[in-house]
Amino acid sequence: MKLKDKVAIVTGSTSGMGRATAELFAREGARVVVTGRNEDRAKEVVEKIKDEGHEAIYVIANMLDLEDVKKIFDRTIEEYGTVDILVNNAGMLSTTPIQDLSVEEWENTFRVNVTAPLYLAQLVAPIMKEKGKGVIINTSSVAGAHAHHGTAAYVSSKHALAGLSKSMAWELGPEIRVNSILPGAIMTAMLESVGGEAAVPHLVEGSPLKRVGASEEIAKAALFLASDDSSFITGQLIRVDGGIDI
Ligand SMILES: NC(=O)c1ccc[n+]([C@@H]2O[C@H](COP(=O)([O-])OP(=O)(O)OC[C@H]3O[C@@H](n4cnc5c(N)ncnc54)[C@H](OP(=O)(O)O)[C@@H]3O)[C@@H](O)[C@H]2O)c1
Image 1: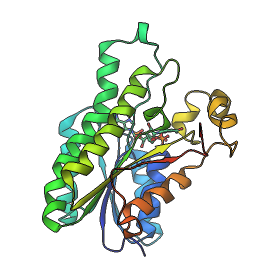
Image 2: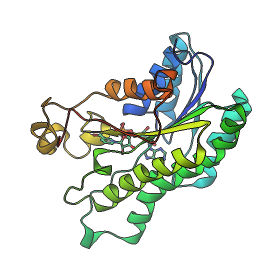
Image 3: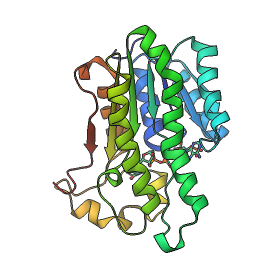
């Protein structure tokens, strides 16, 4: 098992890639902290992990609210006494064109996609530093490397998260490795909310693999980055996108 006895927080793990990552980490021996706003789905994920014979708890938290974000950290320490892995996966999509974008939508997108990951990293880092070891994974996006029409707040926030990951790698190392995953089009509720595969032909036809990805394919990349298999990798933006725009 690659994560035996590790404690892993996976934000936004009531659905999609976060859920797949939480389930895979648990199968690899981690005690997992599942988070999201939807309690029914959070319970379902934790029950599935426990049914498979592994350990998990959930914390209901809205990443817009930093007090909620702190609750994730506090509950993790209360239950498990430590933390080894943080996956900042929860994300908010914004599809409003620039001329119609309100300051509120812009700020909320940044709050969920950048501020909450920063704040959680600030909370877990002292523990990881003291242990001499830790891993942070930030889920950016191909939108963290390229812009597309009508998604300025999302694109800007995911670029910011990719940049923040590199800064974290410098400042939190050498004890903590920090990498960012840049998923391409992955078949999840978020993609379905904008029309599914049909809405992103540029991401499918524009890639050598000519398909959307599955959440499990992101989870496997996260496992690689969370485990010692990637012990000499930090500060990287790892694209898991079928080869878009190569
Ligand atoms: N799907 C794609 O094609 C794609 C591509 C590139 C990057 N991404 C990124 O990948 C990450 C995961 O997205 P996904 O596609 O797996 O989407 P998803 O299935 O919709 O899952 C999103 C997760 O984030 C949580 N979440 C969203 N807003 C939240 C908030 N304000 N507070 C707390 N939790 C919140 C959701 O939990 P609740 O619903 O329970 O609150 C859910 O668990 C995101 O950062 C997204 O930007 C997605």
